Image (cartoon, rainbow, N blue to C red):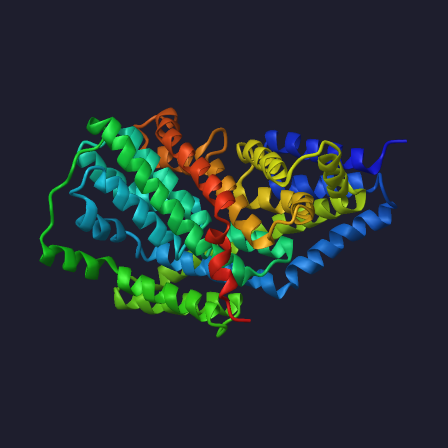
Length: 437
């Protein structure tokens, strides 16, 4: 008789095969969850897992935070509030070596603070930043690589859909996770900037300098870029949550209201903008909700089968240290991140590895931030690498292989960031520890 743990392993392998066959993620999860659950429990109970997942997903108040922040990002993207961000930062740092690449990184972080989706940030910055870097003779590798790596900051900096997804699945505080993502994202941004400096020092021809702007031009760029208004919306939304004024869902509503006001002030609002933002939000929300249903079904199979306990016992039997456990989990996430996108990977693997991580004594908030950094690497590595494919699709005359080549130096940046989080866990846990309530 085959063991329930073996069934769970076969279910996971089948899920990966279905993904490679281009079956939608949510359908793959649901089918594997229901079918293989029938092998470890009664058929009626297996079907109940699916219905329970539907009910728990669509009635969970915490899940409502996702459409709110998606709508906020949709309004910002459709009203093109992020278009001037690059010009704003380029006016301040563009005259330095690699300055336009640095401006791209900062603009990605700023737009990520109101968007939370890497592919949307990559699409925007490719349209805005790439032509400017091309104008100043930046190589395609550093131009596209900087855009793709910078876009990955959207996965980490609040409002991060991946962090929110992790919080829902892990039962961790979404407020604390979003707070942990702020400092973690800032440190990763600084690591990226250092990488640009090293790259341009090794290969000065990869990036030229743009003209130096006057103080008056810089002030004008600051005002027209909308950075002050965007920071105010971010500060009100995240700061109110930090102070205990809002729940995460309420913070999302405040962010949406703020984006409405800013888009009207900048005369970017129209009914068409509202319609497109609503449609995009509904489509993305539906996709993620159904993925959560599938992940809930498959995750319950893993729990019932005892797969997390089996992994924990295996780690103990081979005498893995706590650091060894983290390295093992990191390796699994890195491998799967090359094939599975951030949100479904988070939904799938959190129920398996979180119990093991807690057993090793690690903080759930720290692990959430750490895992998102590791998963972010998948956005710039083949064969998935959604940010790279998005960039290549927009530029068109640059081969996707060149885009991936430009992302290679930033792989080292992610490794450095993982090491920093392991050595200085306070990067992810200090701000959450100050959270009221």
